[in-house]
Amino acid sequence: MAQKFEPEDGKCLVFVGQDLEATGGLEDYNNGYTDYFDTPAGVTIYTNLAPNNESYGHYNKGLDGIKTKVNWGAGDSWANLYLQDSTYQNTALAIGLSMVNHEKSVAKGKLDDLINDLADWIKATKRPVFLRIGYEFDGWDWNHYNKKHYLKAWQRIHAILKAKQVDNVAFVWQSKGAGSNQKVLEEWYPGDDLVDWCAYSYFGQPDKEMIVFARKHKKPVFISEATPVRQIDNLYFDSDLKKVKLEKTIWKDWFIPFFQTIQENSDVIKAFSYINSDWTSQTMWITNATFNKVDSRIQVSPYVSQKWIEEIKKSKYLNASDGLWNTKIKK
Image (cartoon, rainbow, N blue to C red; front, side, top):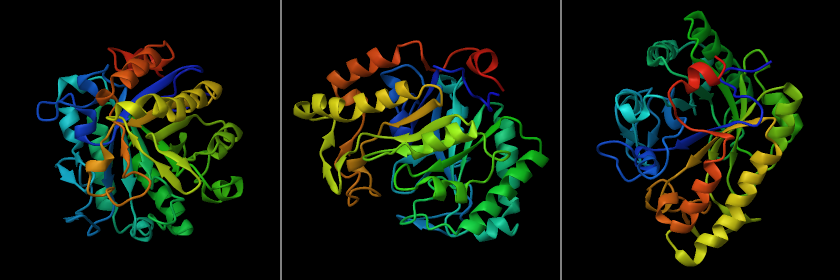
């Protein structure tokens, strides 16, 4: 049985993220992905149920980045800007919903007002929304979620959106993509009745544990964060697509295995989101060993741009189009 917004086997939705500069196609953000390539089927954005958390000078109020522009140190984010622009009229939204330091408050109902506001906003978008609740739940070093409270928080968010009859949302459960075995995944899994899609991040050393898990639970997989990190053990190599001497190597080392992973698992991998950012320029990442050597903007490399176009034009990949979500993708 197909899950919410799941395309047929062999088809894969193309999303791009994860900030306004990265996606482009907008009046004030016009040097990003969509200014050079087909408008994607979806874009990735972020918000939070984490009032008072601070990130590089920004103090959250809760649901930041939805109705107002925000920058947490990783580029501008503003969901409503996509909704207001005709470029993205046929584009879905993938929302990373953080609740770091607040999963217990969410679980106990203390942030129900924010959840209700989010539910109303999602319903009003009238377009598909992929909601990644507590994304990278197993990112112990940066998210440090408590398992009991995380699972109860997930249940509460799910229950509120269902009670408000928000039927244009798919619930997405996302792992960090490396290091969590089947036992860990089972322990942190909210349950088949609460999850529509399984997901994971694909960076330097992704494994296939989530793919194995998803097959077992008969769920589609969303590679919900992907960017070319070239990593061997704890060594990170330059992945700057601006450098002509590196572009062919980066394509061979990262892009080819990435697309092979999608092809070899086309029965379950039904969507991916490519992060088209200059990580080296963003305050959040300039001292982060994983990303501070990465400029993943496809358009800055003529070689990678051509290779990307050749790949993405294949019929298996779904970009934005009239009727995509009404006729080709099951609600």
